[in-house]
Amino acid sequence: MTSSQDQGNEFYALTVNGMRHQVQDAWVGESLLYVLRERLGLPGTKGACEQGECGSCTVVMDGEAVCACLVMAATAVDADIVTVEGLSTDGEPTDVQRSFVDAGGVQCGFCTPGLIVAVHALLERNSSPSELEIREAISGNICRCTGYGRIFEAVRQARDTRQQGAQ
Ligand code: FES
Ligand code: FES
Image (cartoon, rainbow, N blue to C red):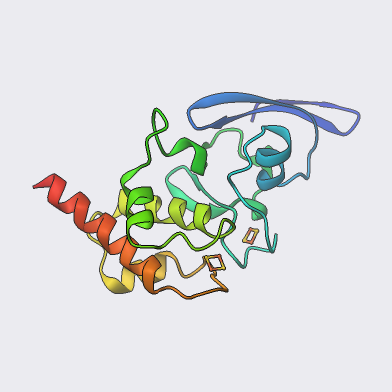
């Protein structure tokens, strides 16, 4: 871990979306969610329950989808972190983002970023997830509005589009 302490505050760097970011004068106990949003200016990661229950704050850390509200940022100095802002290149929507739009799976701004990140993580490690694997992968992403039908359809579309592209 590369960091220095000054009167209880930490100076360290995080690798987020392929770039090294300096975090200065941060309290050592700050969550990754807080640091991303309030110190690094990356508000795409949402905070709702802040207890690991809802998935709004999902980011990818070293290839795994995690709840940023449960990670202490200062412990993530050696990790490769990807937020929803880092998924696309040149401002173009990703295949998963397009499938969410096409299938009507974009239902609210709180849940959608976390769902998109979780689905990217799923498809990166498993290019042909079964229905059960899809459900397991987003079981920690809670929707409280219209339900999961269109969200599941969006994931199936993204999976099928990737498989067709690989053939
Ligand atoms: S805000 Fe992190 S799981 Fe709800
Ligand atoms: S998608 Fe956010 S509450 Fe349903």
